[in-house]
Length: 378
Image (cartoon, rainbow, N blue to C red; front, side):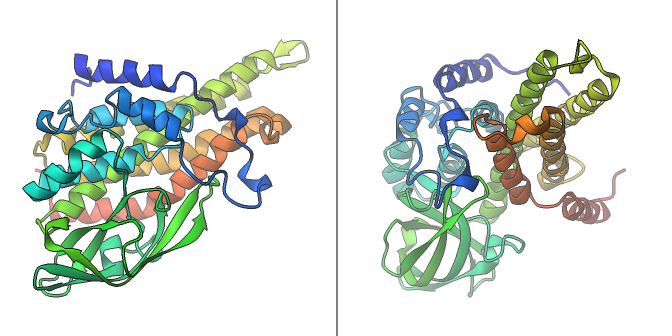
């Protein structure tokens, strides 16, 4: 397969690099050393710069003020954002907006998408469900009453929930048994947020829904909408893991090239070189499987397996790979890696959060096995 990126993709990368050039994680305090969250809000200044660079509207159609690009473009930008641990809801906002564009009604699109692309309306997605292990759509029930839907249930670990204007909530229709997506405004009657703090030290929200009424125009009932959105969110998370891992391996290379033992840089020692080479291989596998998954989602191209099969493979490598990269980095940095004046501890915390978000590789291998059994390869 040809993984050469288009001129539009390359332009998006260059724009992202320019926006993220001045962002550094070093000044952020360690989550372990703070009584609460790292900050009360995401980086609004950076958010405005992303909007000005048209990076919030990359995947939106031209009629909504976007560039009409695909999931590969989003993953390229997310990869750059993770290298500096950008504190913005770029993945969630973009994924939610594209789901509305692909499956929502015309009235909802006209009211929401242009604002989301300009950064004026901030969207997030409740994708963790009640426990983080079961399907998110199983945590909330939705029943239709006249011209509205009524939601009941709970979603945990909702990213940026306390700062977003809308939360896109998957739910299970009690009438049809199908998944729906409901757009819940911040502060809506019956929707209560409880504070949670992630492994990264960032604020999350536990969203409780008690007979929350949502107008029918703000509920997406199209078949496959939640599965598609879930695949996009997962693939985007794999892109974050890749960008973070690449930056951490770069930090490790820089450090071991300067740190000397017995008069020689430790990077020249075989044991160090072999470990670094193994992590480089992890990153290349993470990259190849990521672009395969993003390409399948973005183009809708057919294959022997559904796109969820490619996403499962990407998750296997990203979940295991990002963990191995940061563990090796900590080992090769020695005690310096635990110094909170050095940013490696921040990358380690984010890597653990991404690993937990993706879930264990064994579970994805089992899911992949089920897909292979249901779709035997010729």
